[in-house]
Length: 452
Image 1 (cartoon, rainbow, N blue to C red):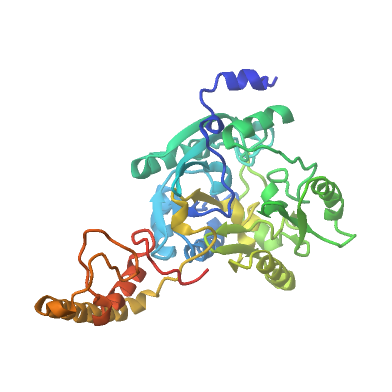
Image 2 (cartoon, one colour; image 1 turned 135 degrees about the horizontal axis):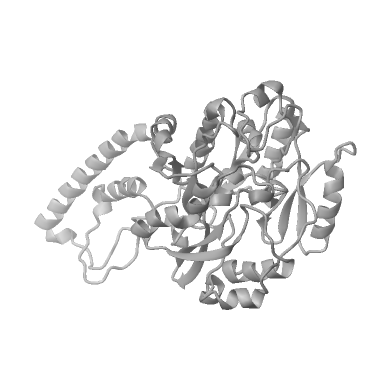
């Protein structure tokens, strides 16, 4: 029996929405991305060696745009560290599987003014996509604990983030509540105002009973991307009839994102997965829930699934659609069939942490960072510029005739009470330019934005 919404919320002190928190759109600035590390032999073939390479490819693609932190079980930390590039952080976190979209926190933000935001997290319940009535594995104790307790032990120490515990199952399982009850919780925990219900999801998405991120998403306010096929022989056409109708009732544009051709598990792929009582079997010939809607937006980038082989042409079509939809972002396809074999894709294995300072990231732009190999050259120029600037300042001290009026800065802004000379004539401006490129926008407010 479900609990009446009013009674359930009455027992919950200060829901996030009443305090001014909201769930930010994925296109808003990120502080970084969190991922898990796969290892279950009953879900990932050949003891996860293939899918681990796919996770490395996803993490590497995202790391071009923002910080990535990968969480691995203790026995896998060394493996993950050796496989991942150096700029990706690796931490030891106990977990049953690696679907951080479902087991990780849902971050919410509160505007504080001046481009600053408070960041907190909603801690949902998790039951392995169905619990005892259809869950994908027998025990999900570590994933349930993972659903925020672990991450906030880390983040609270580093950033002092607030945690909101919620008693209902969210994306990670079946929800035994009415629509009205679910909407009450969504409004209270995430600050949403309108909930759009779709009668069906993607065909063959049996693991999660049709998660939305495999089927549809907002590209921006009023614009929806919808997984689509015009193949009348594909059962997905019947699924789209309901979904398209629901979107048709809402304002805004619907952009069709073509699906790949039907993909199926091969004999070799099925044979590599261990059969364990209580876990879902992977059967040769079963259709895979392949979709390009399962992409991930990061700062300045779109990381999109690619499947190769018979789907190569469809991969390119999807890339072009996304490039048109997100002209301000760089679209990066990643071969992710191995992740799809486990029941999801790139969006399912990632979880964004929103930025606390919106001015730091300036919306969806990204910043040019010089390759590490060029740093010695930059520092050489910087040192030379500094020497020239210092020489010039010595000349200024020894020759009062070239002193300038007080309160002038090289960028034209006034700095009251400080005597500054025209140092740019002696190379100081060159030194500052390279310095700001190296230090980064977080530490210098006047950093040059190199690429939108």
